Amino acid sequence: MDDKFELNHAVGLFTQQTTTINGLWTVYAAATFAAAGYGFAASPLSPRIAAAVTVGFLAFAIGHSQLLRQGLQINRQLQDDISGFMLSKPGCSPFEPSIKMLVSNANPPWISLAIHLLIDICVVVALWARVKWLAS
Image 1 (spheres, one colour):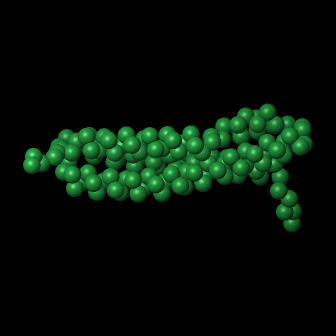
Image 2 (tube, one colour):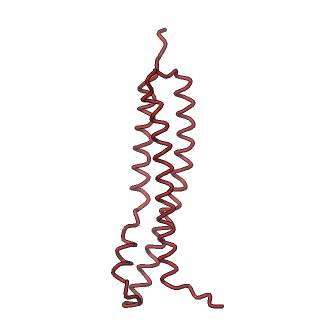
Image 3 (cartoon, helix red, strand yellow):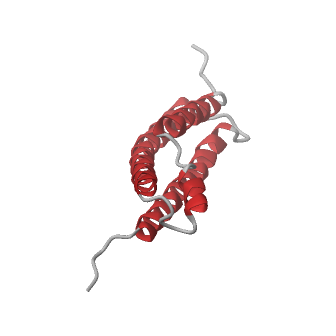
């Protein structure tokens, strides 16, 4: 049995991790539209309903951002490992330019997490913009 880890294995892991990250963004988009949809509902929301939806969405957003951060960090490490390997062994693959282009697309975690936070804030603002406050 050959347990040798090859460049193609690392590229496969990178691609799988990228697919996982894209899947996380897809789930996040669905949850974001659902939560923001409450803010654009035809009828005004009560503060109690808005608070419940906000707490649920923020709990989801915090958990999601942690999963996303982990996935992005793994992808960046794979990017470093693949790039380092190819630098140490020039010409190791006829697909070297394609592999370099593939791994160059790994986002730094801070960019995605900053976008995540900005969208989270927009969702909460959209949700609370439709709250009907009782006159005191």
